[in-house]
Image (cartoon, rainbow, N blue to C red; front, side, top):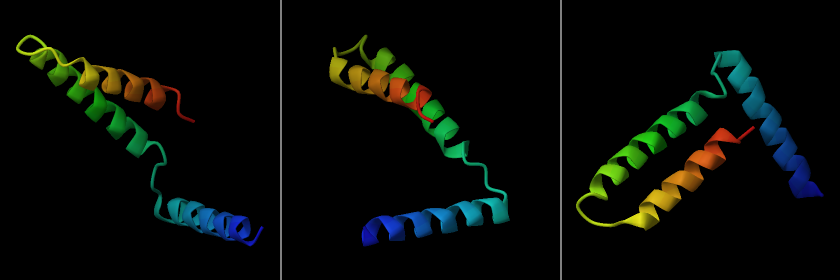
Length: 70
């Protein structure tokens, strides 16, 4: 129970700092999505040279997770 209370206090402090300095919460998610899309594009290009379906699968799952994030 004590750990949960500490997590809530820390979460509130972070939220207050975000509001105080005007940092957008969704900036990281958009940046991560664009970088993942870029990696996916380069992975697709590299598949013409050598079959590498593991990286493509990881990129596809990452894009799915980033799109459906709250």
